[in-house]
Image (tube, rainbow, N blue to C red):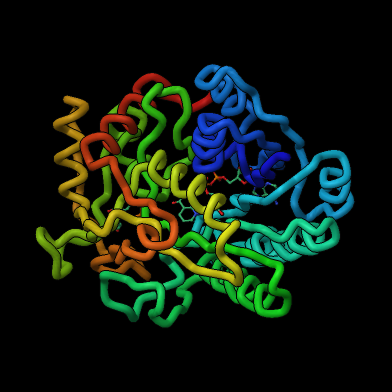
Length: 336
Ligand code: NAD
Ligand code: UDP
């Protein structure tokens, strides 16, 4: 039996495949390569000695997905596939609703047809919206501030309804905080298209000389140094949370949302200082206006993951930044 990993050639998916191979789990990856390349799968083979079975297909393509379930014995699905750029989602909402919501519904229909009713879904801390105060707890009310966040909320609602309708479903929705870092081999890591939107890829491209200076979005928040605070989580810890979640599906029925964060907050300037220390590179920055939609502080209450998954983050900021730097300096142009 294999696990189906949608979006498995992307950033979090590729790290998760490595951890699944490490515990002896067979996988099938499906990806349409909209935001990744098969190079990451070759690198997985370099790290683990094993190459995942790869099917190039779109999760919205029902016939292709049925084909996949016919030709492979799938026990459960980890569903990463989706579009994830907040800004782009405000310009192309239909593309986000199509890929993230309609694509997930298609996947769930095919899973139901083939009686595969175990799922781990990639949700996000964005579902807590901008009204709750950190630490964010799974029981807090959810809301969305942009179409991307709305797609995560809509899919969570669909998953809760589905699990309620049929007790055979076992679903875990992992609400990721801010994944950063890379595998310690420096062979796989985050490889954004164009100018990065997220802090860490931007900082590392400044450090490596691809971008001139970081724009720090606001220094007048009510935080330790006025800059935004987030709960950064090492992508390898996050990948391990998926291994634990798949194991937990056997004992959990219904749909359960679980935060995956460290419970600690770090400011933008603390990230910049740590990156300078680790890389020895200069990181020039300019203070700019606050970014619309940003909030001052976001960090997780991380107890539920410990209780239900037996998981907690093990890697600290030093590893997150030094692994990001190793990946970026070994691969200044990503996988190209
Ligand atoms: P990524 O873009 O690196 O990986 C997503 C993968 O899905 C890509 O390889 C892409 O080609 C593929 N894909 C997209 N649409 C598809 C489709 N219709 N059919 C098949 N494949 C498709 O992103 P990531 O950072 O690895 O994120 C994985 C998941 O985690 C996403 O659902 C994202 O929304 C969620 N998430 C990410 C973050 C983050 O900061 N990286 C935070 C919270 C949640
Ligand atoms: N940020 C910044 N400059 C950038 C990108 C991000 O100052 O070029 C800040 C942003 O305002 C936030 C933090 O870094 O306080 C994390 O931003 P990111 O987009 O990585 O994650 P999110 O805000 O979605 O949690």
